[in-house]
Each structure stands twice: as structure tokens, then as C-alpha cells.
Length: 199
Image (cartoon, rainbow, N blue to C red; front, side, top):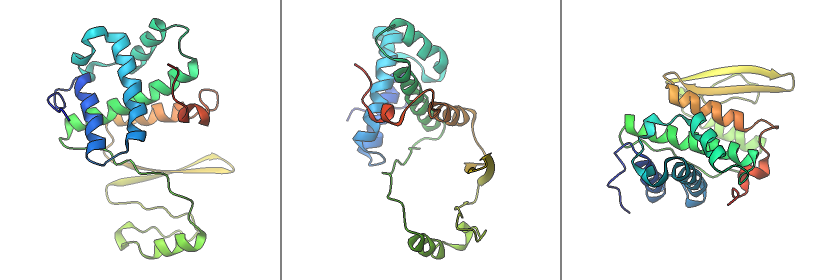
């Protein structure tokens, strides 16, 4: 795998970075390929033949996706453009963090089946002392050192607990915001995320 561009901060470097995530076992090809496809299609359409030398730190994602939509008008649905925006935002955030912290990579794990109440109790009982919470309500979550727990009463029947780093960076906030926006019911369906974007 070629990695001569991975540290350049360019779009070509971002693509090599995504390949490296798979190469190092931090994510599967199935998880990374849709992200890579979305970013590459958008970059090539917006920046043309010189897309690989574009500095990722200079990418304005809202403008990028808007221009992509205009350049490909009628080819992609609004839902597909929303999915592409979420994916581009995600990989740009990863790559910028990698550029700030050499060697950093996300760890993408497969979704695990829901554990039974008995199994959850067993797991909580085996946690190290510094990773336990003890509300005693059966909804305990792990809050590790350096993390901040935020509890929101989003709806009466839908309490939300967020666990975030205390030193959140602006690009990480942007990534989280884009992901949450992409989950709204009027912008995206579950099938849209799982279906390959339109060619």
C-alpha cells in the first residue's frame, strides 16, 4: 500500500489514510469503502483533475457539498447528498485529527447483539473501579477519566446520555453535529445509509 501522501494533509493523503485504517485492522473494508467512495466522488467532481493536491484543512464541507450538488444536478437525490455530506464530514474530521496527533486512528467495531440483563449485570460487576458508575437504575454507562457525561431529557420517553471528551476540538464538534443532522427523519432513512449511493 502506497503511503507517500498520507502525511501531506491533502485529499490524496486522506484517501491513503482511509486505506491505512483497513490495513492496520482498525476498520473493515466494508465500513471504510462507502466513506472513501463518497469523499473521492465529491473531491473529484468539485476539484477536478487536481483534486488530490487540495489541502483538507481548507475544505468547507457545506460549500463542498453544495457545489457537488450543483455540478451533478439531477444525478443524486437529496437523501444521497445528505449521506455523502455525513460521510465526507466524518473522514475529514478523522484525517484532521490524525494530522494533529500523528498515528491516531479510529477503531470501528461491528455492532454487537443486545446483551441480556443478566449479562449486562455481569459485565458491570467486572468493570475496574475507575470505570464504574453506580446509579443502581440498570442504565449505568462507563465514564472513563477525561470524559464528560451529559444527560438530556430529549423527550419524556427518550432520555439521552452523552459521554464526550472534556477537550473536544471544533472539528470534532462539527463531525458530531453532521452525524446527528443526518439522523433526522426528514433527511435520511435507515435504508439510505445501508444502500450504496446512486452511481
